[in-house]
Length: 324
Image (cartoon, rainbow, N blue to C red):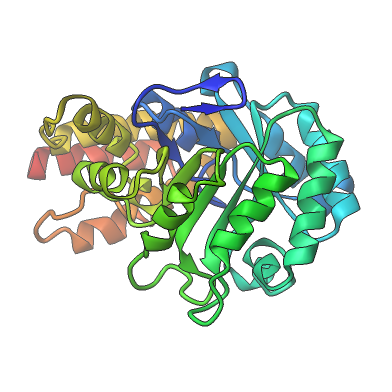
């Protein structure tokens, strides 16, 4: 599979863009475990144009992360084009347009998935970005706004005609947010459409090696994207990639192996965000790791309230000793 001149092997697995999650330390762990493509947190076009420091920091990418995409969102074609030019200066491999974020502060203001209710504007934005930059442009969207409005097959053709070079589809509507099950049927319909020639990347509920393989086999997508299932367990990419390559399931990481991974992750987070920010940022990860351990709730609560590297490492060592 290719996106512009980017070559991917068989069964590519991408790490989904997630706000407050896919910052450099998380991306480092996903890449370590085999993610074929990384995405930054999504950046507001208006904030990029205004040179807001918190947003421009999202453009800090590293060579070991490649290939990597910077994702932007907004609703003004000129602002989005200007932001894309700014992003291009950071030399990403891909510029991705966010047409899928369902949260109120984005979609409710007409950006992200909100543009599924204004397809002419979505088209103008896409054309403005494609015409503004030389970097390959891709997009990520959803099936539609709600169960009564699922225009994804039309949207896919429209965006392709605008010049995007790959399309990621999350198998939910905006109204679903992240509830219920992702519906991959329409994703498969887009992929099988004889008019479509760009890669189609499927997203939604890929939470295991077998599920990833099923999506490739059943719906024919060119790549799968993993999002929430990687929070707390970025080594899911290792498990999925190995199964797709060999048909064999790797043994699950032991508790001691998870502890070693989380210590490395914490150190990287501190390197990126300093103290106590790097430790506090890990709370989202700690909330989702060590899944399935018996009588772990009280220990998890304690772990989520720690603020120093020493205390976190002491707690992780305790976990390794008690449950390892």
